[in-house]
Image 1 (cartoon, helix red, strand yellow):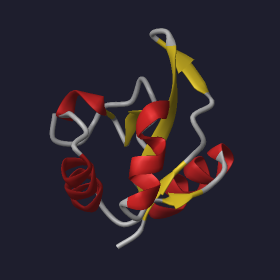
Image 2 (cartoon, one colour):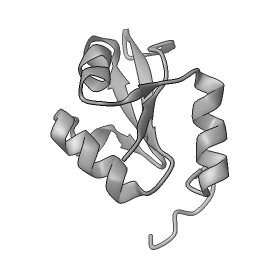
Image 3 (tube, helix red, strand yellow):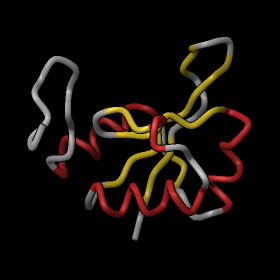
Length: 91
């Protein structure tokens, strides 16, 4: 099981955020996020938004640190990318 996280470089709501993704399945991603204690509302289409103060927790739990562009590459290569404005299968 491999889950990836990019640096907390994304501003929003007065803090900085990281993206947590899987290159295997959403089930893997949801399981990891659940164990990390990330709320379900943090899931956005194909990733979890993780606040900067939880970054080290995610890495300690086994998330692999990658650059932001690598997150997008992993999602595209796995077929798990869900861009904004596109319908989510099953919705």
